[in-house]
Length: 82
View 1 (tube, rainbow, N blue to C red):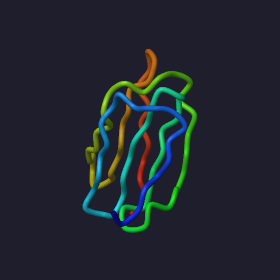
View 2 (cartoon, rainbow, N blue to C red):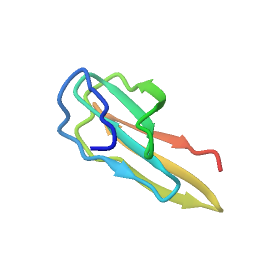
View 3 (cartoon, rainbow, N blue to C red):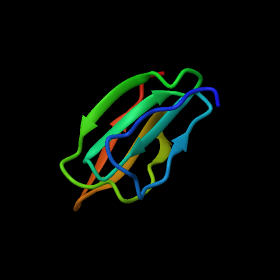
View 4 (spheres, rainbow, N blue to C red):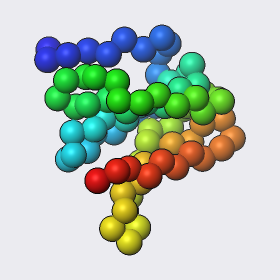
């Protein structure tokens, strides 16, 4: 094992990894977070106000990359820096 990240609760959602060395995940505790894929370092953590029960997805519009996650009854979209 190269690294591990301890979550405060279990997750029912999937994990998304990207070619740009990012890992995204969320869980029942109501947080969505980004990790560095090579080191496991927490890059950011965002409260989404509800349980994350779906896997994150990534997409691009006009050359800008986004990651989206459904939590509770809302959809959260984050723009990624190049």
